[in-house]
Length: 396
Image (cartoon, rainbow, N blue to C red; front, side, top):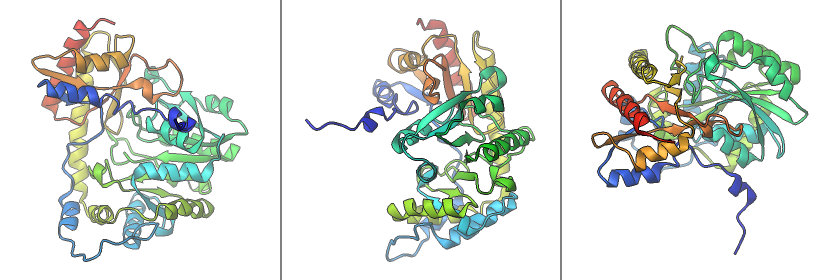
């Protein structure tokens, strides 16, 4: 029998999606499930984006430029300039989701056997992208007790070696909801300059900053133009996860020329989705104001409810729409599966993402889960009640 590649065997399962078969089985038994495991917003996609696709008059569904439509990149550059990020269309390559942009970035700055340092917990698919690129993730641990703030720079420096090529951050963070301060971004900028590294910032949740706080992009640090790489996406900003449109942005011309070769190899990003994404840039600020108000209310409802459950600890998110909750259990994987296989409360249960999959350090986060507060408040309240009852009944 032909042998499967070692890389394929090493590719990690998604902690977010691996429980799907158990959820499907639960639904077949008539159980209703509140899905807290995945960042799929229930916020409506802007009508202007959907209308742009619905009203298109096209006889040939053709390729776009490998970098994406010029008109879209021009408008995207204008969007960033409004946020004090001075870039041109030539600094942007449109990708098939932020995922492809991350693969372009890793492919452009690393060789097999190289290392990237990432504060953990981090978006689980970073492990998968690194495996696909033959790159080793070196974690630097942030803690729930510190609210998942940036670890001390000295912790990063202890891990930097001749194999280190980049530091990767997610800001605001998935799965923590942590929003890096301007000072923390400046510290990272000084670090990558000192050690001549790339700083890859996944900023797909940039619009979601709460409590009067502001998002600080790595692209605002003009003294690291040759180091900074920004990853972005329309998925969360416009509630367009299915569009699969993102981008890689950098003022490093050599980096972008290299990324373009990866873009050419996959031909072009999807045409209809680019049309929708370009139109979405016409979305008024009032849309985001309303969305942020809604998420703040949901966050407060969730965190307040979790804090009332005995033994549960949670760090209050400052952005995005996730939080990490530490539960009074030993193994969140077993608990999450039990919730779907063996438990219901009045015919309902919940689906959570075990947090161990968001770490690369062995044995860390085993009693934690990531919760996405993408449900209406009344459903969040019921989901918290279900979790409370489940924890009372569960036996490790």
